[in-house]
Image (cartoon, rainbow, N blue to C red; front, side, top):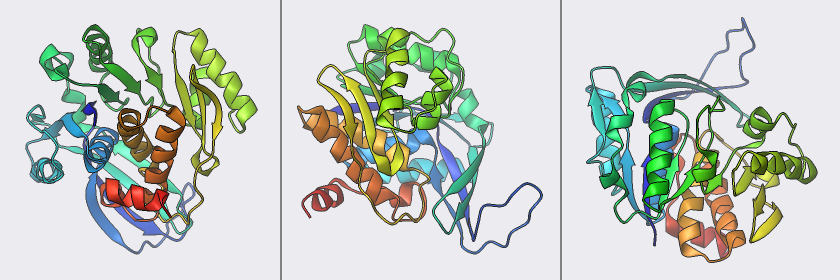
Amino acid sequence: MSKILVIGSSNTDIIMRVPALPRPGETVIGSELRIVQGGKGANQAVTAARMGAETVFVACVGRDHFGNQAIRGYEADGIDTSFIKRSVMPTGIALIHIADNGENTIAINAGANKELREEHITEALFDEVDFLLIQLEIPSPTIIRAVELAHKMGVKTILNPAPARSLENLPFEKTFLFTPNEIEAEFYTGITVNSSETASLATEKLHEIGIPNVIITMGQKGAYCSLPAFKGMINGFSVEAVDTTAAGDVFNGALAVGMGIYENVRQAVIFAHAAAALSVKKLGAQPSIPTLDDVMDFLNQ
């Protein structure tokens, strides 16, 4: 089993269920309200840990109740939290509306996530690490420093470019794998991704800027892969969605683990698909993340 280093955001999610997502100027009456742990980095770290990988998480949370609660949760999942920083800024917050059809809208206040600085990323973090998993909810200099150090230390970087934003000065050629969804792929390439054909065109543009391996996730359609070992669509699983909030994070966390378990990239992607499919069947980000046993039982059905 691989050792995985996750560098990224830690948020507290305030979730409200609504019959339909509100339109601009519209007020809707919500029902269930939940306060749970989230953040793309945290979700991916929790996924990796629940999949059985030795997981180190680097983040920054506030010196507040939400920050204390987050660290207790990560420790309960067996994550190494010794490199998590504390800030006088409040812990990041995500306000989430979830419609009855499973669709969601999310607004984020970064808070303490903005205080995760490049000087916090040191060579010691990469000791005996197999994969670095990183996203874009933390400052750009921190991301660049992490990618460069991972490359120097021989660690494979999986860059999940979410949420989509400019990545100036990022050394793409030093990443191992780039995992946008179809919306993020369009942001970086200008190509509307809605089929395997358009996904193929988008991956070619991403290769042109130096990215060696690309997997574009496309929800229940599956994922389009462009790697030396395999090029093409790998179908996902069709399940009844309750909440899709963390599906992409779960896919990425499980993919990092799957690449350490399986020699075949197809099997690793199917493993990640299964974890993501299970996650959308429950409400909330981290409460919905399955365990390794859950995923293997699902795959063996």
